[in-house]
Image (cartoon, rainbow, N blue to C red; front, side, top):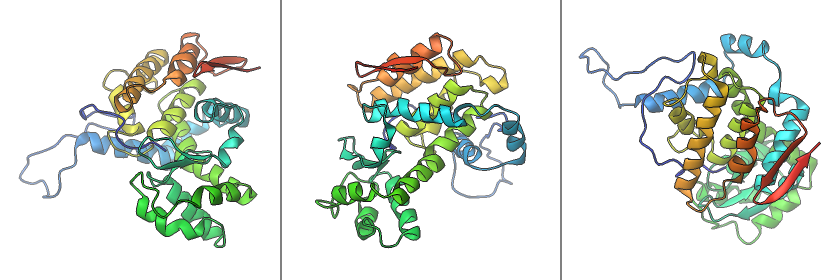
Length: 301
């Protein structure tokens, strides 16, 4: 989904996880010559790798924790909440056939993961799907998708791509492919890293929603850049910090990040959903749950 241009702050080197360490540049004559990589960038790469890669020590920690947002009922709840922000509906399955240009510089946004033609994830989805189903109705658009990747252009996609997407979304195989890619790119890494950071179910949802909106790229403008900046101001719960205090700062900085990109953006997903749940102490994201999104009320018993 949304990738670049979200955060406008300067990168600051930090230690990012319990398993990470400070990475400091050195001027030693014994240091190998090569391109300079900032400690901040290295920290973000480490966080992304830890979120997506199975490590024996992490797996042991995760196995000792409750399922949290990965519980099927909680996951469905998470998808419903995010759907009220993305689709103005509790029915997240409407997202399968959804496709439109939101005017945010990412080209077409489509599917249950908010995959975008300009941010590579939609291209990756169609490539994976075509590998398994070569004769699908989107395969002929692959050359155009590769050309527009990284831009907001529709060249080669109009006028037929949106119609082809909606038609393909009627097929169970493509719906399954969308679910798998959403989980691989957004849901699973967000929940995994949140658990390793010591966050409960609400915190896991906060990470997931931020991952969807800001994108999972390890850049100053993506989710990992946002998390890095939070760590400059708050201590991870897994390192003995307060979960409420950490999430409060996370939401503060995320709201600033959203407004830095789009000054008039509606921040309901924070102001009238996630923040009230946090202040009410609902760290388990327990139902009944009520919230407002863009002024509209929602309730789950």
